[in-house]
Length: 130
Image 1: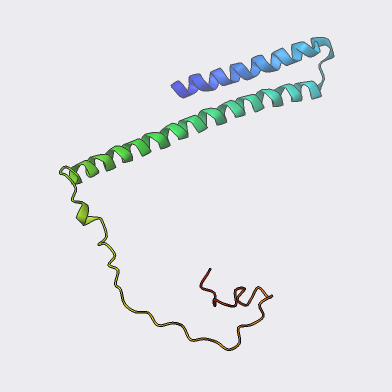
Image 2: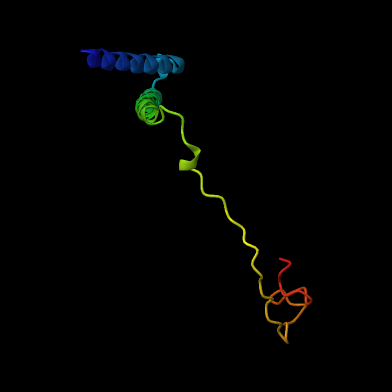
């Protein structure tokens, strides 16, 4: 029953808008083009209003579902993290540094063109400055 009232209300608004636009033209000079323009403008207004209402409704439904999911996840997380968390369970082990001797890289006799970007730009050090 609410849908029928809504349809009657929309039709009433459309007819009022058409009547207002035809009244602006003047009832003595109304042509078919004026009627078509008035009906088109009224239906465009109703379509835009319906799109805005539908977008708001869908946005509210999506927000409501996301809040329900969020509350559900918060409840599950609350059950899991009731106690104090142990940091050793989620931290990685510290990196150990060894003091091993590293051999020098072998010296090359030809180092490439020092003016080219493809070769090493610092001839005294084979690219270790980068």
